[in-house]
Image 1 (spheres, rainbow, N blue to C red):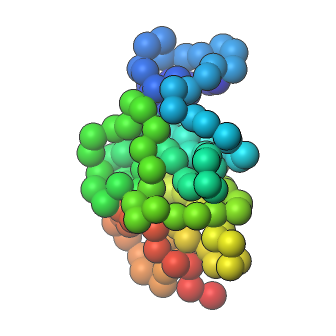
Image 2: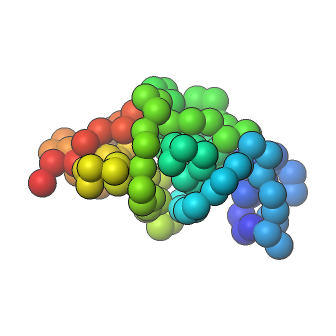
Length: 130
């Protein structure tokens, strides 16, 4: 629930705000949810990461920046994860795989993807460099 201008709360852009919890079509066996400014990601069946909403900065992990995801789309390549974090009020997402390795994708203007690069977007999950 909350802001819904990119379909990130309901899978549809109408209404523009959702005032109560809403079931998103295709969201099955959800174990974790993370919300960004205009996108939402969750851990679903088989611990796979799914996202919906705005994709103008690669937030959905689909290898490109458009179109927005009105229905949940699986991050590509498929990423098994045990934990999920979406940058609060931001346009990037990170997940931790079963081996403990962190992966991030989306907006990277300030290096928030953690791959040692600065600027632009990462449209697919990238391993975080420690």
